[in-house]
Length: 157
Image 1 (cartoon, rainbow, N blue to C red):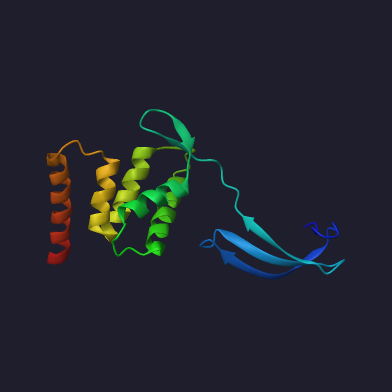
Image 2: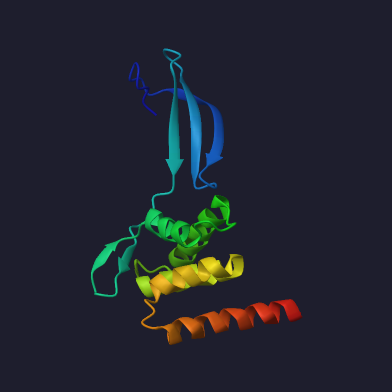
């Protein structure tokens, strides 16, 4: 690693710690020539992942876009931010584990809805109403009825 101060290539690692849920390693380094200390970050280089939208367009996978949708659906609900970021982590891990470089937005949406359904039913319904673009009250009612039946089965166990 080249020192940003004297540009020599000999440095030693003083401290290492994981960040971003273990996805990145932060290292404090010290130049062996001049003693300058600096920070570097090491992360796995992942292949680009493309999302195929419902209209056929492709765009780069964006974790922040999914997180914003979850935050909107969980607004004023008792869902901690850590749970929301965990959902995004789980969804991204599921997508990357398939090994495909392209994934449809419908698959991403269903992964998010599966995760939300287990955490908060209201957030799930809110997300589903936008994701599935409910056309009328009947579709909304049927989705709500499904959530209520699932909840009843949980309580009866």
